[in-house]
Image (tube, one colour):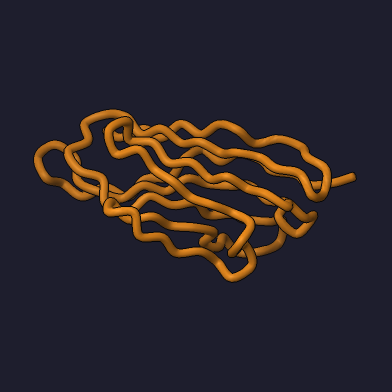
Length: 120
């Protein structure tokens, strides 16, 4: 089993910053891609940022230049630093981790979600 635990959401004013963290634990043999997705009310879940094991990153156009994704391979953690937040960033943010479990079975797990609200 692989578990993901997220932290760091909350309420922030426009222009503010938040940092989300996600820790993966369990019978992990190898983690490939780690990422953050979000889902706003009435909208589909969308990719926000992804990072490969080697550090290559991909961002949604709407967050480029404002958000930064990072990971610690030794600790199996991924973080999302969010700056210059706007009300359009309000959503539930989900961590996603893909890799191999012990026994080389593939996994693709989601965190429980953390609410990010941007409002004055």
